[in-house]
Length: 217
Image (cartoon, rainbow, N blue to C red; front, side, top):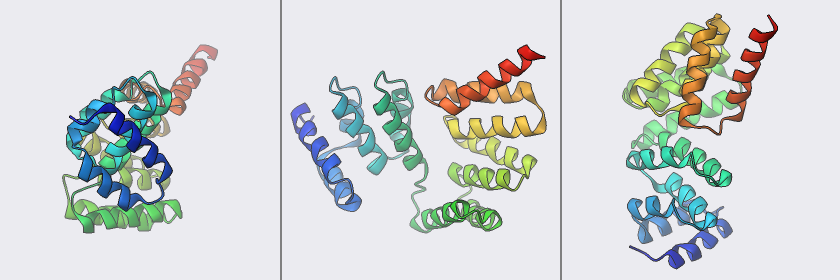
């Protein structure tokens, strides 16, 4: 295994040269295996752990997801945030370049509030890669924005079926259940999101508001 000091030096280079993502990916791939980076997640040096999470987000496959999910409970908050970003990055890679381009196009449409166009893009993703969980998750978001609650809920459920660690889909499911008036189901979904990722401040706040509302009734 590569030395801790060697990775510490690379960590400094990563933060310094973060803007050149493609070169950074090449450097990481040439020097480190996924197992190396997974082991560095648990380093006593916080900077090494944070850099390892970022590196896995750049080059990691689905094989590293269990380690990243476990790292969401790291005592170092910055490492947890880097890990959350890394998971989103890993989940957004289908392994097919054309599918990934469609996913990015759908995300751009979402960002630009072109929600119907986003649904079309994500539907194309799903048709091309029916086992790619993120296609369903992103379409669930688009349907949510269109207030198509039942369609959004169905896509959240399919996301979780394909990716049981998808805290985003659990959170989305909670949001939909709230809109449908299913408070108990919303609470259950929010709690599951927090079991996977305890750092979801907005979800913890939503749970607190629900409990406060019940106490005031």
